Length: 160
Image (cartoon, rainbow, N blue to C red; front, top):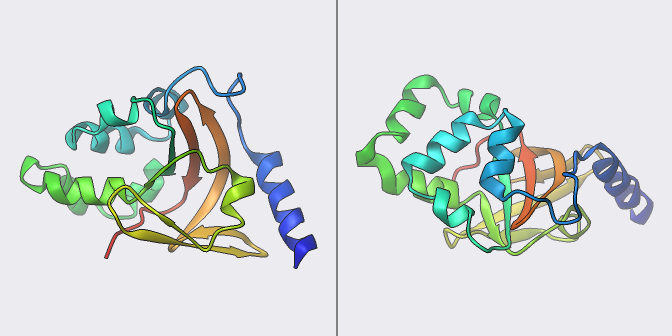
């Protein structure tokens, strides 16, 4: 088991795009926007008035769904979530993707759960195929920012 975790960790670290400096020169929001594959996440953060929070001191760990992950929810669902009257639900979903503190891949593989900013915990499962957060597969790790770290996931995870 130890060898499998070591190989998994090595694979995660080797495939991770890391920003230029040890802590990243841009905050979580600017890093995500610059990446170009988180436009829906950026729009959702804006609709939920969470941009300022994720530009704060942190540190934060964000399990960031890609645009494709949001698209899998369906356009009607996305449109409904972004409506002002659904702001509370959107905040619950988005804060379910954020953990307080800077949790790097080397730390994530040692966990079986993590408490999110919405108060609920996500399940973390390490398998030979990689790391899962709830039903989402972690596809890139350790994108360092000035106020935390981003791990890219392939699905939007939903709180209960």
